[in-house]
Length: 64
Image (cartoon, rainbow, N blue to C red; front, side):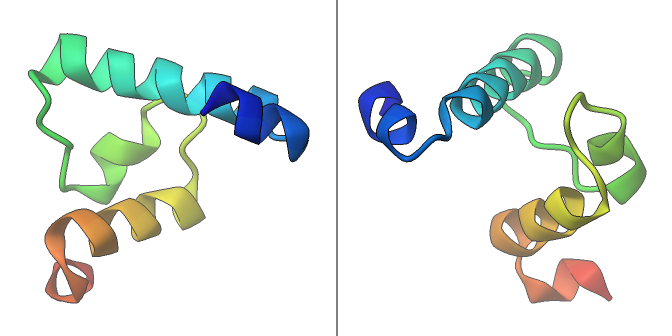
């Protein structure tokens, strides 16, 4: 994946995403937080990313 993201100019985002995944795994046992506030406390996660994660991980109903 690093090669693909590097060629697209996304190497930094790839590194951030990997770091975020490792942190969630180590701190939460692979459980993605459902609450927007908990997601936003993770490094590199703002409102847009938190909303997207909640929608894809828990379905559109999680946004209600």
